[in-house]
Image 1 (cartoon, one colour):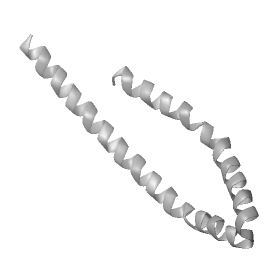
Image 2 (spheres, one colour; image 1 turned 180 degrees about the vertical axis):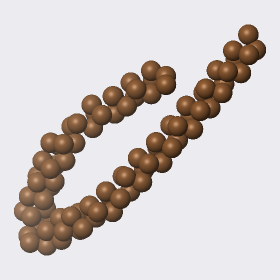
Image 3 (cartoon, one colour; image 1 turned 90 degrees about the vertical axis):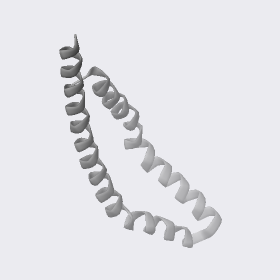
Length: 89
């Protein structure tokens, strides 16, 4: 496996760590502002957000599985290319 794959994965993980504390904070701030503007009907958006969480989870798992298969295919392709280049030399 080439090092750029690992560095990209580490970079994506580090940049995604912000979401652990950032997303709930943004949701709380946005819902409070919406509540001040719209009143109780602002919670309709929050309910839809909560109801969409299972779909988001399913799509994230599916995307991860597809990305894993894609990475395996790339590794196989690069292995074959390295063999071809080695045979040419």
